[in-house]
Image (cartoon, rainbow, N blue to C red):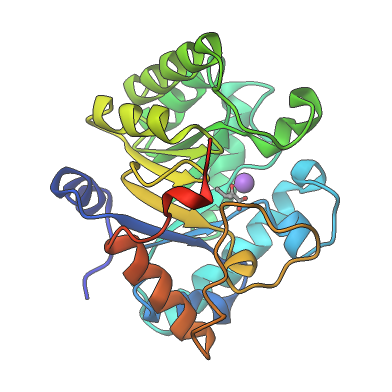
Length: 270
Ligand code: KIV
Ligand code: NA
């Protein structure tokens, strides 16, 4: 297998082949996910909850993100993995200035990331352009943006009113124009994310709780393995249940996303 690259991801988007993504926080899970055929691995700041036991992603630091990114990158390297490696810029590491964002992004790139992800629309577009122009591929993230959970008032569906949908659409276009090559849509109505997916011709949408109309899907690793400390989100499916092994569960996830049997309509009635 050849390493997954930006042109390859763009090709998949154009061909309508669904892109698969899972979070990974350590070397072993990263290697297994790669072997299972997962194309993109995200070192998500969800590691704050999953690995560190934090109440939200707000407390995750850049140093912690770099540490886990290094571990994942080493795991991939050891097995000559081909996955595209994305790392989250954590809360407070990119909002101060575009220079701060570049500085933080470089720390994650040095740790082995191929792309960084940042949350939010509007003010983020100039930051995305600044990074992309300097050789840092960027994945944007709209809809439910967990780093701003306290400002949003909880983990709930976004973009439900006409006004919110319009803002989301405007932000998505601006981020594409700024050069974002991927866009995570989290807890967004299925119809809105499907429309955005056909409107954005240069940017691959990756959904989580956003219906099946996106160019790809992402899930938190521990969620899809049925390991969860709190309440399981409604859009998650436990792929471990029928799989018998972690690798089997990941292969089932890849197969279900490719065949468009995951997600199904019952999993996201918004
Ligand atoms: O941190 C994370 O796991 C994420 C995904 C849920 C998209 O940002
Ligand atoms: Na995240």
